[in-house]
Image 1: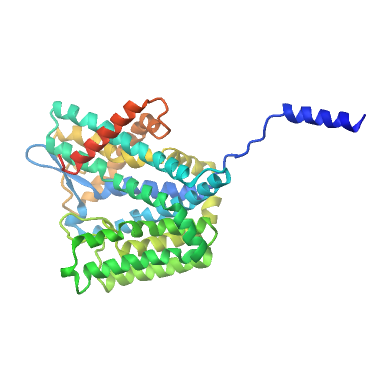
Image 2: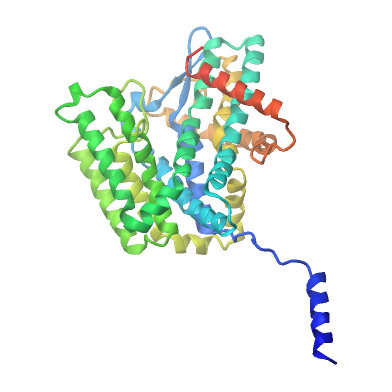
Length: 412
C-alpha cells in the first residue's frame, strides 16, 4: 500500500471523526462546593434565628431581634457569619473561571458581563415577583405595615448580591495584585478598614462625617475574595493559612476585649454601632480566621465529600445557590403572614424578648426549610438565562424590581 494512499485514508478518517471538545467541562472541586454550601446555609439559618417578628395591636408584623433584648446571644453570630468563607470560595472559583475564559480567547469585559448577569437574574426575579405579589396581598387584607416589613426582609439579603457583583467585576485587578504581591495582596484592604475604623471610633470621631464609614464597604468584603483569588493562583498556601488563623483569632480577641467592639457580627436594632454595615475590622479578623481554617481543612473536606450521602446535599445546595439566598426570607414570611391572622404564635410571631425565645424558634426552622425547598422548585428557573423572554418582558421585570426595592427602602 502506497504512502500516498495511507495518507488519504488518514485524512478521510480525520474528517469523519467527531471534533474533540476544545473546552471540556471542568471537574467539580467538591471541597470548594462544600465550603460554599456551608456558607450559604449559614445565611438563612442566621436570618431565621436572629431575625424575629412581632405582632402589634392591629395585627401587623414588625421586625424584631432577640439580640436587642439578650446580648449574650451575640456569640451565635460568630458562627453564623460565614460571608468571609463565601467570598473566599467565590474568589477561588472566579479566578479559575477567568483563566478558562482567557484560554478560550474571550475578552475580559465579556467574562465580567456574563458573571454579573448570572448573579443579578435571581435578585431581579424575586423582587419582580414581590412587586406583583404585594398589591395582591394588600387587596386580600394584609396590613401595609406587614407588607413594608416583608419588603424590607426580602430586600435585606440582596445587598450582598450587589456587593458580590462589584467584587466579581474586580477579579482581573485582584489577579494582577496577587501576581505582584502574592498572598499579601489582601493586606492593603485590612489597612484601609483599620484606618476607617480609627477615624470613626477614635479620638477624632466627633468631627468625622458619617459617610466616611462607607469607604470600608468594598475593601471589607473584598478581603475574603482577594484571599480566594490568591488561593486559586496558588500564591496562598498552608503557611499563609496558619498565619491567617492565628492572626485573625488574636485580632478578634483583642478588638473585643481591649477596644470593646460590639460583640454581634450583625446589626442590632437600637445600637448606633454595627460591625457589618459597613464591615469593621472585627469582620476582617473573623474572616481571616475562617478563611485560614478553610484552606487548612480543604483536603479533609474533599475526603469527606467522596461519600455520596454527604455529597448529595452539597450538590443540591450548589445547584440552586442564588435561589436559596434570594428566597429564604420569603419562605419565612410564607409561614408568618398567614399565621398573623391567628394572633401571636410562640416562636413565630411573638416578640423575641426573652432568652428562651431562641428555643421556641428552633422548631420552626424545619418548616421554613421545607417552604424554601417548595419555593425553590419553580423559582430556580430564574437562575438560567432568560432566553424565552424578549427584551420587553426583561425591561418590565427590571422596572418591577426597582419599584419594589424603592418601596422596601421607604422611598415610596
